[in-house]
Length: 209
Length: 235
Ligand SMILES: Nc1ncnc2c1ncn2[C@@H]1O[C@H](COP(=O)(O)OP(=O)(O)OP(=O)(O)O)[C@@H](O)[C@H]1O
Ligand SMILES: [Mg+2]
Image (cartoon, rainbow over the protein chains, first blue to last red):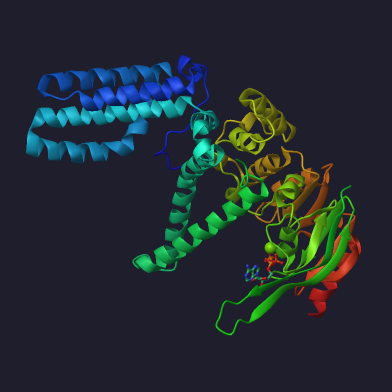
């Protein structure tokens, strides 16, 4: 089974971006996104969109992602870019469409670079550090961080369950019945959640704070 | 070796229907486990997993109590869980991080606060399981046996004194179950091993046979296997 690759996965490396602090990278991403989103307008928006996309491509190369991998990360987004671009073209004309497409691609690439050069655990540590002041009002940083990482980790697993369940329904000749697919899928996802909960409790991770 | 005591510990579940009827899935059981390796065998649905889950508080006894090294499991659950590691049948359910080393690091978050020291420690643990080369691989790309070893590494990273393993080799092929079996048998921890692999069970010092929610036999692992095989043959 090929691994669904719609999520940018951490790729260990030795680049400047790998060694940069998480706060710097996330802060940079926020600033980058703000510029992309805020600067609008016929020529300026287009120019800035293009420049930001170029910047994101450079960041990919610096982060050691290579052009091929960067493009692969963008593939799932292309459908949306084309759909949105077409809509924009119809309602607002070609330059607005081009600007939207450039902006979306630039944002996606920038986000990919950050996740590809930052280990999930480093991200969690940063989250925990940033949330620590909120402890006073009852926020439990380790829990919040763990919830994030579970959500990220659950995506490929759930997709794999969905594919398996679909194949099982097909094998019984029930490929056209949504209930033959959805009922067992929901049961399996909930059962998996219970198992994962038990596993976390058993590892003593349910009561960290 | 630690001492695990069950003092008339039993589990009854409510059926949840209007009459309030209930079903006993483990009859009150009294046991003291001090051997290094204890095998638990028996038919599907006999109550093995229920018994195992009592030992780290994943299941709470509805009567009696469970005590690990003097600590009541129901009252000191989190302290007991730090002492009793638990390994599940399906490693996919217990591996929660994207890469192997990150999953081991997750276990170490509490004990090793410094991120670098934690990473170093996680690498040492993986190395001791022969998995250092896979540290940065996605857990999904490993073979079943490797995945179970990573799960085991994650559990043993915090150095518990007891390991409870619920059919850890059931999903594995012959070579992989031998490998995981050898690792389990070589552990310095006390091991409570639930298994349908009778050859593996025989390698333990003590064997329990569970049938219909009760301990049907308690003795040497060889004798326990004999008893179980005979009980299946006579039906
Ligand atoms: N929470 C629960 N509610 C109701 N019934 C349960 C619950 N947990 C277990 N049981 C039932 O108790 C019985 C014993 O279950 P248990 O999982 O301990 O068996 P097992 O010996 O581990 O079987 P297997 O070899 O199939 O893993 C089964 O009939 C099961 O359906
Ligand atoms: Mg079981």
